[in-house]
Length: 257
Image (cartoon, rainbow, N blue to C red; front, side):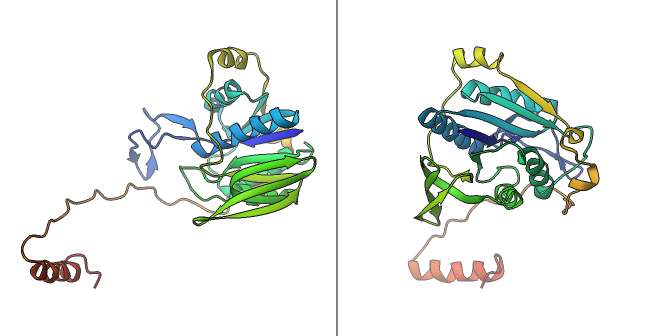
């Protein structure tokens, strides 16, 4: 089985993030594999082990993304591909990403493509569906269970507090939701093996793409941190007095009634 994982390098949102001149400052920032993509990596490895085949992890970025690709290889992926756009594009969006990936996948004969449901830095959840449409293959988002039998797949997906079961056929693209599995940590033997596993690097020219072909359709005007939360208020006194004070605060300060 020919399995691919779409991976993104993201800011570690558990670390302090600073914004300068309307952009996130990378000075001193920590980067990680997008957590939802870790579920995708784990699922790809489990599917490979159950059905035989090969797992290739793919990312778009610069040279610095090699670290996260090596981590994916240490987790158990067989191959890695870096599509390096560092010298070609100053910015991109979901259209850019899906268009580049579509060119990469067009001759790969992928049976299964897995990605995270969303990236924690953008949260659009658009790349997977856009890519599937460009490749003209079936896709299911926010999956919490995946079973494959031959060329048939049974997928359970999260639908706002409930579940939906879908039957479809390969080739298939799915995006992983929390609860799909428990991602493994890279082992020491896995880290050592990862150093010898193939990591190929491509550029736009290798995909027969020009900058104009992948020009973003949207533009980020400004990035800013949410305002700091003010201290809450504790109401005291009789219940009737508290209710009156609460209504007054909601009307005059919060201005929601």
